[in-house]
Amino acid sequence: MTGSTRLERRIRRDFPEPGSAPEILRILNALPDAAGYANEELRSERIRAAIVLFARGDITKFRQAVELAKLDWRDVLVAGELADADWAIRLDAELGPEGQGPRTHDST
Image (cartoon, rainbow, N blue to C red; front, side, top):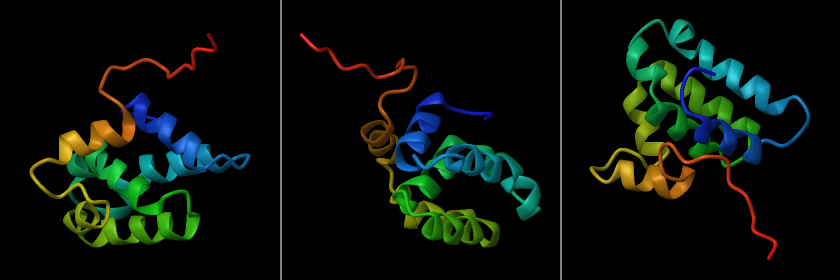
């Protein structure tokens, strides 16, 4: 996936069924060409995260969000609750800070 590893981690967490995460990533990577507009916006972590956050692990909701993004990427930001000025803070809260390595659990 071109983009953030923190988003990829979230996709793998939200869509754990075998083959689901790679398919989600494929669809997100193909979105700019499928939509035919706003290529840079549709490649952004913010838009892709809004789609994933709206879906909350539900493939049907994911597909709805993708279709919404094809119509107007701004509507996806609203649906994924990343439209407000504090979107970067919310994104960090949902995905972890940018540049953060894989999350590990300390067993001690």
